[in-house]
Length: 199
Image: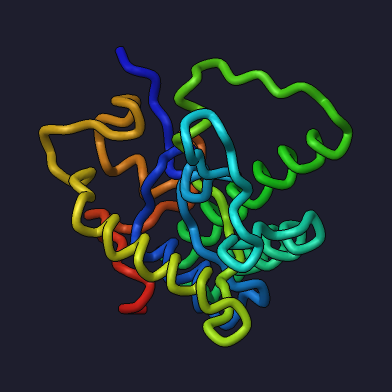
């Protein structure tokens, strides 16, 4: 039986998670929820020569402090009795992503070696990126819009005959909760993510 993975470990996400991270007023740090493979650190040119991506083209990752803020605010949404079931489920997923990403950053800072059980885990999980400002970072903002438009064209993860995330998720309903033991889950069916320009 294939190992079950849930929303935090998936390279794709439900639209409700995307919308909450991107523009929910209860979250002070606005983020994109993308795969860890969204932004390579370098671009390979001229055979073996590697060139750094220009800083104005980079989409920034949240700092440890920003991740702590996201985690705390998402937890507050999750625990708020006035929040809908969908909001609680989406908030728990965002909380878990921020927590996991913060742990990775703390390990990097402490120069702790990180080992992955499977190589696909390095490339098949959600990661938060700061939403680039269209005026201050026009190239990064354009990259975000273009990437999400292209991704929409090729997303087939909701088809019932295919798994995704390296074949580790067979049922798309796993995208609706943060982990198998989570008490909060968004209502099925999964809602397909949309280009950021449409949010």
